[in-house]
View 1 (cartoon, one colour):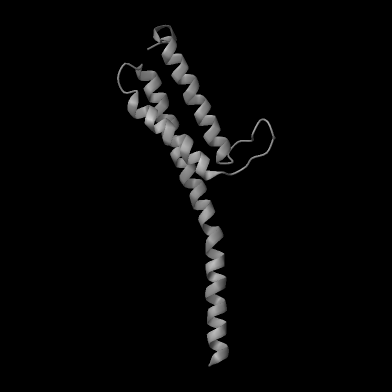
View 2 (cartoon, rainbow, N blue to C red):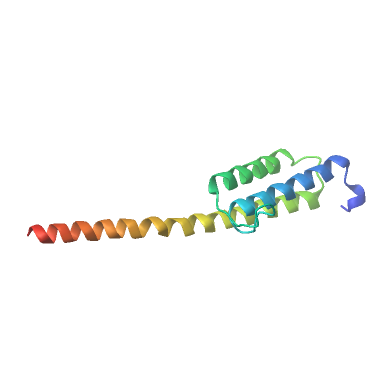
Length: 113
């Protein structure tokens, strides 16, 4: 469908989708916050934004232009992939601590023997 066939509500949905997508990208630290100029990471807020988009995707399956549904599907998929990327980046931070703890335990048990 073309923009001429989109209703007022379709335009509002598109605007909401783009706003939530931009918010999630900011919350994942992928783009700078336009107010502060800094990129900050808040995965809890990013997940909440993605969850809202997923809900919209599920609720808008009827009476919504196909182009808008494809854009919504793409936005959710892109954000989910970026979210998983950020989760994976956050995981290695915990691993060095676990390795250091294991090394300390090994050294301690070596000292005892």
